[in-house]
Each structure stands twice: as C-alpha cells, then as structure tokens.
Image 1 (tube, one colour):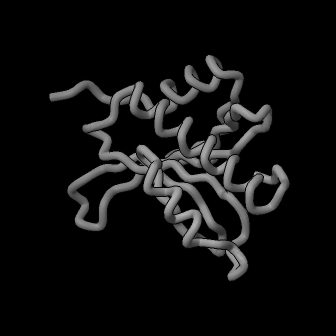
Image 2 (cartoon, rainbow, N blue to C red; image 1 turned 180 degrees about the horizontal axis):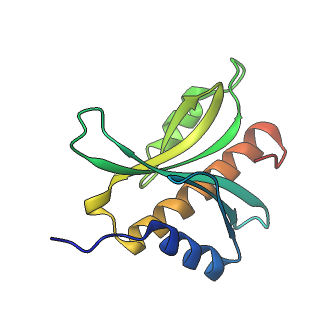
Length: 136
C-alpha cells in the first residue's frame, strides 16, 4: 500500500520554492498563485474528486484563460494543444481553461509540480495571446 499523499504540503512547498502562494479555498480545493516565466502571475485551482463510479480518486488542476467567445481561433489553439505534456483545453462555466488531472495513486510530487507549472504557464500564455491582458 502506498503512503498517503499530503497534497496541501506538496503544493505549499512548491509555491514557496517558486515564489507563489497557496490560498485554501475549501477542504478539497486550494488556489495556487503561480509566477510565470513572463513575470506575471496565474491562478490555478487545485482539488481532488472521486470518479462517478466512486472507484478512483483524481487530482485536478485548472486555470482560466478568458471568457469563451466565437472570435477565439479554437482550431489554432487546439493544434497547439497537441504539444502539451499534461494539459488539455476545456470550456467550463463559460471560460476557456487549461486543465490537467491525474489519478492520485499515480501522482508523485514531481508530477504534481510539473502539472501545476504547465497549467499555469499555458493558461498565462494563451490569456495574453487572446486578450493581451493579465486577468487570471
């Protein structure tokens, strides 16, 4: 049996290491404020959930890019998404978002760090490409 994962500790240690910040949101959700390579910051929501079949526990990370609208060249961004390592593009609650998930029993500290970094960097890049602003 694998040892239990302390996601809060992993995320807090990582945030401290890179100059970010963790804001507990609920018992199962935290907001991670991540510095990006462009000198901006990006909010990433991290949480755990149980699959619909209740057999698998997941860790999920997502970050808003911008409000979704028909003027966004989704063909271009979906083509770019083919080069992402962990992330995918989703539309959630009316926003284009970058998201990533992993089964808890497969997650390592390094994998979680890599996933959070990729989600924050891609969301920040896309947000700036699409809106020219830093809102999220």
